[in-house]
Length: 91
Image (cartoon, rainbow, N blue to C red):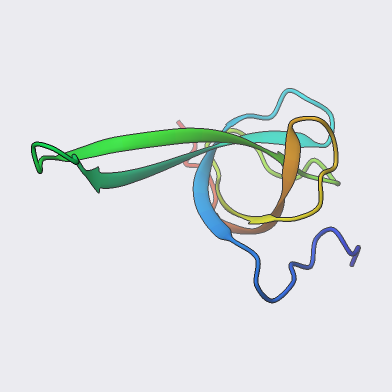
């Protein structure tokens, strides 16, 4: 296994859904979370997209994956897909 795929001890881990797999060796992962609004106290949904390194191109659109923070691989990519949490449902 390559050194990019094995996360270090104190790295951040996030779980999200692959929303794009069009680029070579890269997937775009949408991470959604629910936080309380600072002023009104209502629970609101926040989301952010991360570009993650996928060396073999094995993760497809709709898959739920875990990504780990690592060294910068390119200008926008400093996350690595570590494992598949759930395979996408066939429609």
